[in-house]
Every structure is written in C-alpha cells, then in structure tokens.
Image 1 (cartoon, one colour):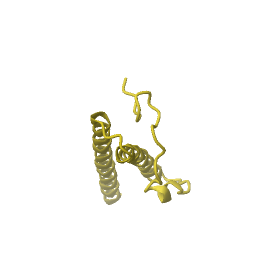
Image 2: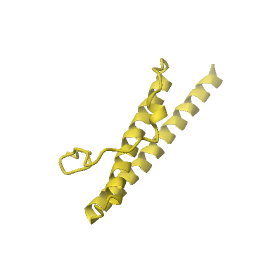
Image 3: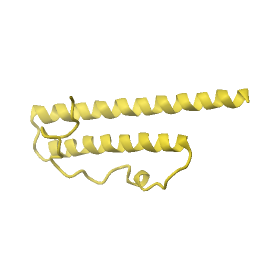
Length: 104
C-alpha cells in the first residue's frame, strides 16, 4: 500500500515553511454540510501544498538528487490533481443545488 510521506519511512525530512493557507487553517467550525466539505477540501489541499513546499525547500537546500526531484514533481502533480478534483466537486455540488433550487 502506498504510504504518503517525504522520506522513505513517511516522516518529514524538513520542517515545512509557513503555510500559504495559514489563514484558512484558522477558520471556525461551520454547521452546513457544504461548508464542511469545503473545509475538508481546503485541509487536504493545505497538507499537499505543505508536502510540496517541504520537498522544494529540501531541493533548494542542496539535496537536488534525482529522487528528490522526482518527489517534488510527484507532490506538485498530486496538488494539481487535488485542486482540479476540489474544483470539479465544488462546481458539481453547486450545480446540483442550483437545479434543486429551481425545482422547488
């Protein structure tokens, strides 16, 4: 089974820098299911962005081996995939709610 992580044992090799989503992490609890879905997508995107930043910083610090370069590339592609999936899911839910609202 694939175990996401930065080093071979799954533990971070370096401390991530200040997350660009730090303001989003400090959001208060929401009561709507749509807000909870949005918060879950945001948290997943923040985690993946932190992973990509940590790996990029590792490369910038001098560990520019092909393995690390491949991990940076993979983390970036995973972030792009998650971003597209979050956008598609959000749009689909919004369109479904709009359609439901018209039928009421």
